[in-house]
Amino acid sequence: MTQTINRPLEGVRILDFTRVLSGPFCTAMLADIGAEVIKIESPTGDDQRHMGAMRHGQSVSFELINRNKKSLCLDLKSPEAKEVILDLVASCDVVVENFRPGVAARLGVDYDTLRRVRPDLIHCAISGFGQEGPLTKRPAYDVVAQAMSGFMSLTGEPGRPPVLAGDSIGDTVPGIYAAWAICAALFRRERTGQGGEIDVAMFDCLFSLLPTALAQFQTTGTAPERTGSTHPLSAPFGAFQAQDGHFVLAVANAPLFARLSEAMGLADLPSDPRFVDDQKRRAHEDDLRAIIEGWSADKPVAEVIDLFEAKGIPAAPIWNMAEAAASPQVAVRDLLSRQVETAAGPLDLPEQPVQFVGCLRGGQKAAPRLGADEALRAALDI
Image (cartoon, rainbow, N blue to C red):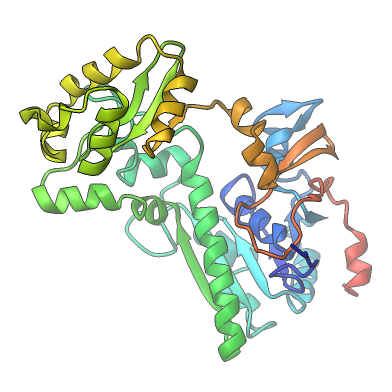
């Protein structure tokens, strides 16, 4: 298929005041699809430069989420910086910040201040609990958002303490929502000429990811509990033991259960009173698990998956990060630019996952050195 270099956000300039994870994750996605992202850092740099996974004294975490950006150093508390920012904003389409509510106004980078320079500006603020509300002043990190949104209460094994999700979804999910909202606002501006203010809260974003739990709660009036790797409503669903590891299985209707039974050589299983429908199968999940794992105990995961795939049954091995990153799927889908030279040494840099058919992928650029793009001041006459 013929590819073009015209990526969706080419020509869009973003002024990025964000740090650590939620905001940088957002602006990295936008840079991936062509936006020019000018990252404003304090003289000591984004905190993420000094934390997270480190190699050769450099933060690998910073490199991964600040790819394709430019860096300017400014002390936002200084009068000179305020003048530079106002000059910069005049040429920018979008401003993104993830300060605590109220801080942007004190620094003079809030929407009301900046739109006086650029009336059609799109201003996106990411925070823990939003710019308004009873919790707006509460400090928020990923763990706080997971804990208070209901997400953490559903993660973990029954009868055991709640656990965090495997990565910082309290930060990354708001970053995704913010990128989506900015693109929607840019589209609206094309149609109406109007900019606007976007308020993204970590709490809100995680709360929105719980449609199944919300449906359960409104059906029963009782808060759902943790179910581990199983599904709260369907069975067999989740992780199962094989000879050399675990596999996952997703069977949520009668035809799939019939095919699963045939694949295991137990064609009469659907007529067992314990398993005649999804509700009964969920109620007798322990019995069903014992049958499935009794069948799979002497079979390698690869053999189990082959048998199930031949019957059209949703099943998969459980890959670790190394296996997923090295998989042909990641390679064919161009999810990583391999061995890009960065301050932390050669790294495989990720790219936002959506395929814009016809647009080039790959060729990711390393995160900028601190203040590496001071020449922008001259280029922009500021």
